[in-house]
Image (cartoon, rainbow, N blue to C red):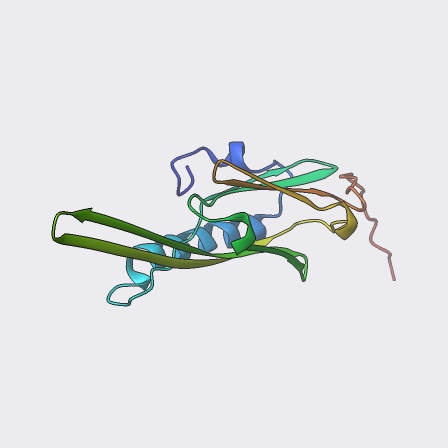
Amino acid sequence: MGLFGKDQSSLTTRNQNPLSLWQREMNTLFDRFNQDFGSFGSGLSDFSPRIEVKDSDKTCTVCAEVPGIKEDDIEITLKDNSLVLQGERKSESTKEEGNFSRSEFSYGSFYRTIPLNDEIDPDSVKASYKDGILTVEMQKTNPVQHQTKKIPIMKS
């Protein structure tokens, strides 16, 4: 079971590097810790969107929950074989009743780095945003052929 209560096999492929799986779990753990305790006592609240990674032989798709954020306030970058998602939420609500006026402001930012197992074709990356869900689709440059090859030991 993963940190989100889901079976890990549904979030990853069977051929994924164990270190990448461990790094992803650690990132999620620290993101959740920061979400719960990181902004205690500060005027700004940082948050970490939940993500889902779908990895196949030819493509990689990352979906992130970013409700309440305008697409103009989201930045997506490919950097050092990682996908970087960052953005900022700004919202304001005002309620007036008679002589009473109440105004609340909510600000928050996020920065997520998602390690990618394979090389990605930067020209193939496409992003879309609908109903608070950011979807980034990427094509892999050279799909890895998983083969088994026995290597003989040379006798000296």
